Length: 115
Length: 109
Image 1 (cartoon, each protein chain N blue to C red):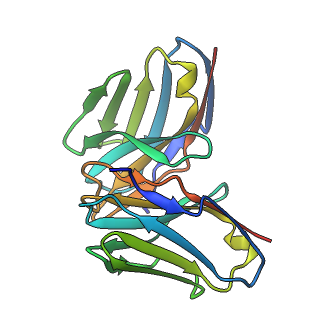
Image 2 (cartoon, chains in turn yellow, red; image 1 turned 45 degrees about the vertical axis):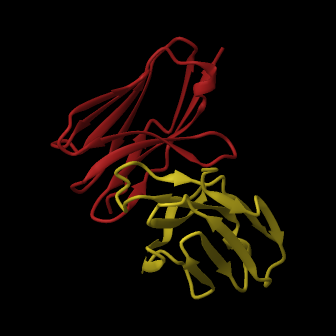
């Protein structure tokens, strides 16, 4: 398996534009997580899915953020409209279990810059 | 929150020396894990220790867990320049992992 694949690696967009981040988890992993990393707040869990179903989205900062997982091999995180404070690195991770009994596998991240 | 807090925030050592990082957390846990993040990359899982374990080894890594003190330590022995990275502890509660803010380790040749 090629690991967790995220795209794009870098995204620069103007304030007010829609941004869509994409993730392909590892085949066979039942859990998918979206994290956001900033210097100030560290790694924050935004939302996670179990068997394609959103379980906890309490970390999603605002209604401007939405996430979907239409099938076991694809998930998206959308920000609409984007704001400069959304600038961060967004990571997708997948795992066999929620508690990571075998660890989480992270993608390489998407560095988002909103100007 | 179960968020772990690593100490120190930054650590600078010479190649061949040992590096020790500590993690404290607040509530009971299922397991505790350590991850490494190289600059500009994703996190990589290093080692997991369960709540009923006290010590675990993996290569040059040694992890200890003291649930009575709610703390863990990660020891990297005989460090190498390639060990330069940020190291995060992550605590597993009921459902997911919560990460600390990490320790930045710099190993100089």
